[in-house]
Length: 292
Length: 344
Image 1: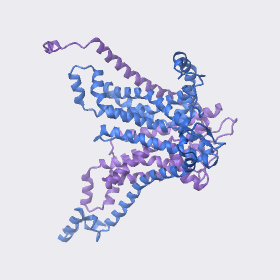
Image 2: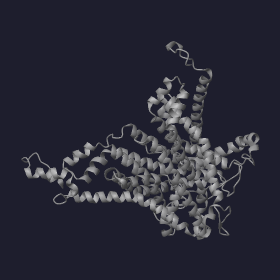
Image 3: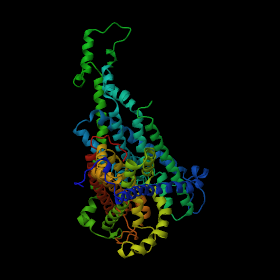
Image 4: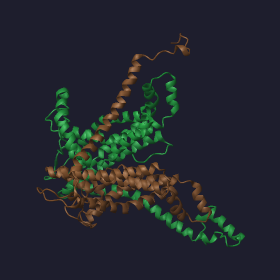
């Protein structure tokens, strides 16, 4: 309206069409939130509803029964999962933290950027492909499936996450702290381990827990590495049951009893993972650099 | 240890000579000055050990490429480029063509994007621009929780809840109203490409929306204020001042979601039907690259079968790497200079 004089009193009103569009789009945004949250609550509701009734003492203490027999449980799969995750952590955590230290303390250069990019790329590799690699570097040499192969596959998946969070956390430690240590004549490696890493401990642990939660539910890389087992196994060179594998096998089976146990297993798995994630969020909220 | 140079309270002040030594050590000459301070040998060992860890990351990627290329060799020699154009998958007669799997992966991922993109952008816009600050934290927590649910649990839920809903209500409705398009025909079994696309969409929403949220938050506040000052409504402000500025970053998030969808295995395997066929109808069963690996890898008969499967893995690997690199690039151009929160 170039010919009209606009003062504070004559601001043109917002047309009805624009106001309606505004409200409609607000409504659409609210609707998308509802549509996204519905599956979330539906999944948790079903897990609790179908799972709680199926978790009992036998489920937590017994090995699977043959088809057709009621009862039995997933005790060996729960223990097997913990065992495989333990192996993965033993391999993945030191390598990941070490690579993070390298990037933060020595890697401010082109070569460090290369490793950083590699870690990001590795983070996006489909888990099933990592399973293939673990198969060809461990299973093909051992000539049979093993817990170790599963551990290697999960370790490869943990490393990039741990590396990047460790680096970020170490970089948050003030430079003055390092300089103060050097000023006292403390060698660089002692400074890094006892001052820098110590200060960033809770942040680094957050990263490790995130990586742990991410691989805890992984099934695809275990299909042809750990393979699964109907019995107890705590030997690293033997096929081992894992909770996600057992859930998968039971879910696609035609038996109601196994479906019931699959729900129970999924509930146990989710409780493990969500408590890890919740612990992480709690720790983060308390401040990255709380008391170690 | 360097402790020897530290003054102790019960000792007289250090001699001038010692003071120079301390200065030398702390003024950056530690790298070349080895004699007399054993901390420096330790430093070198430490730096070398950390370098080895860094190299392990690099080595892992090299190892993945090496193993995939090496072990897919027989299939590569037998079929060449025809491998990705041939339709038959017949382990008994050793004829392998990956086209149905490539098709299934692409269609299920695109379907997932079509469903997930509007939802994720809507959620991101709502959390950053519209919602009361009090709700912001819990809302993003819930969406992140979706990302924490394992694939196999999504699959379990999809088999027993989503698929019956699809076959009982959604598919009959779609074939009645949209059947003429040819996309929604055939018997409503539930287990289908459609089911795979929907469950994939639920799985990639948290990825796309968390990236989109991050990108929207770095749009400068004065962009919003400027558009509002021109008399825009809130939606116009979001459209002109926020979304337009964040386009590249949101695109990056979408591509990152695509990367995840392409490689997703378990949930898809459980609901897609696992039949190597190419069908126009979304109600028909299909097969993806990742799910054929999940189903057949441990039972592969013969070297050629294994090599063909590994070649599918190699293709999947290359595609996801390319997609992820593109996505990172796009996200970086927007959030550059901002600390990234690395749990996407």
